[in-house]
Length: 477
Image (cartoon, rainbow, N blue to C red; front, side, top):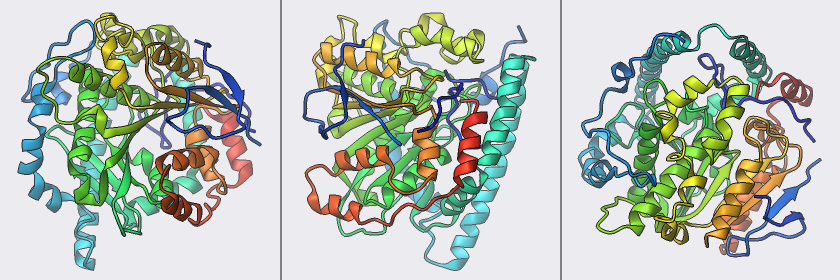
């Protein structure tokens, strides 16, 4: 069992720009004795396992052709113009996607070499952009011992896990099962990576995954380890990239994620996916962004005359990993851990927007409660040793949803920290408890797929145990 550590709410395996940190009990608490599936009654289960100058955001947002769209106080903001035109954009961009998809040209050695050079060029341009944004972020943060010490700890943490990162990075860049940087929208960072199973004997379930990163350093490649694990077990994974702060604020991030989800809902069959088995998943800040997109979509569908390019009915279930769903109750916690209030409010578009971007608060608005029954089953995973985003965040959201007629449950992992479930445990190899839980739900009702997943190669250890334990001790998360 991993010892609880003082955590930061950043969910990334690589040294980022200066890390600002991420940051009900009515559900029944059970020791895990049986597997409840999504149709079962919702429960909570505990699993016990061995002032600076202001930023000029407009320079780096590359302003959208669609203006910032107004939102009502109930968060049912209308971005219909952007989403409503997405299908036409997808068709117009189909050839562009195919030509820019680095791995679609993998049939010849020369093409793969050219694609790799394109990837390197793209990485260089993105590095320049990230560096420029990091300088602006430094101007905003100023000199503060909290984030400086956390940044140094992050460097040590990443160094200790480097053997695993190198192996995952090699898979990401050289595996024929990875389709990198598929275009899903017109904005910068509107790209996604696809992880495809080797067995293509029929339509596969799809997991649309939104990565974490404290709303500042999220990147689609952070989902490589999860994508590899699930694709080896017969699941297509789409890791959706989105613009980060200071290039964008939370409204842009939610719009990006929603466009990426829409792309997968409308193009699942093109990549061998089953349009009737699409799952949405997010981790840390990505869990918050994905939940915002899902709740917003349900509110629009519950209203009248709303045009949508994807529907919550297309999502079989939502999996939230170590997420925060009530920003009003987390803002002080984040501040105490280094994600300073002024920075956090800039990301969230001001104090008045905290409730608007808090799914737990939004669903309790009497004007939108009829949207809750439209939501798919919601399963929230959290470690009880998570101090970046306390596990009560998941428990309380589940309680609220169930009280309003939704279908939700939380699964608690005793003693697990913010990164244990997403990084350290998968890098240990062998049986991964959370992965098995995901697979059992995704392949539920399909015994052949479940049997094939059970026969997948046993995950090998990527990092020696002593380095994992030491990383847990120095982790800033």
